[in-house]
Image (tube, rainbow, N blue to C red; front, side, top):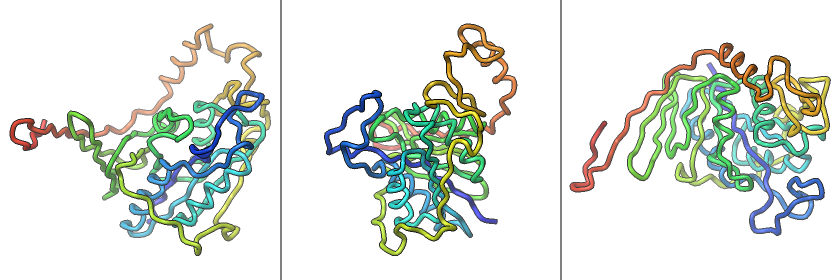
Amino acid sequence: MTLKIAVCVKYVPDATGDRGFADDLTTDREAVDGLLSELDEYAVEQALQIAEEADGAEVTVVTVGPDDAKDALRKALSMGADKAVHVNDEDIHGSDVFATSAILAKALEKTGFDLVVCGMASTDGAMGVLPALLAERLGLPQVTLLSEVSVEDGTVKGRRDGDAATEVLEAPLPAVVSVTDQSGEARYPSFKGSWPPRRSRSRSWTWTTWTSTPTRSASAGLDPGRLRDPASGPYPGHDRHGRGRRRQAARRLPRRPEVHLTRHRPDTHTGATNHG
């Protein structure tokens, strides 16, 4: 059976350029060149390494962004990814991380996956919360900030290195993971795998693929099924602070599989490692 790996990537302004904001206070993407977020290159690399170790695997890169975001997909494909999905719609211009996570979750559900791999953060927003938001929306375990990751017998395993301890974590598939810049250098792209890809390798979707009622901006307020203008008032079932919807959502969420954790603490006197 083919292991389906989805990698979430982002097209970001070049950090060496003169970055700024447009008149609508969103990122000005016209005044500076963009590229695949460097931290997402590590995610693509780890996904490709997992695929190479698997007995049959497929790597699909997924992004949400404007027309130029195809350049990020182009690089991921040239690194060795099999397919690409681009969600591009003027109605979701200006989406914040919460709206973007909802859009990505819908795209991932449509694409299908066994494992979702993310970078530790984007190099423009640097929030680092997208993997957790995706796991929450998809109802899956999350194993994040890994410096080493592997998949074996339907389980994803990884090592998280901290200042005081090293943690070894595992979770059953499907799951969401994120990897750090310590996970291994990304490979160089190859000309053979570059864009434009065969038609079967790339897909472009709009938000209206899933909803017939888009609004001006996803950042205006996003329900998992549709975009919505907050000026129309609270969602049905909400009180002023939204507690009604949160209580309802908590009752609907499936019980997540457990993430198993083993912690290794270095012995500061001998250099040995204690297990606890």
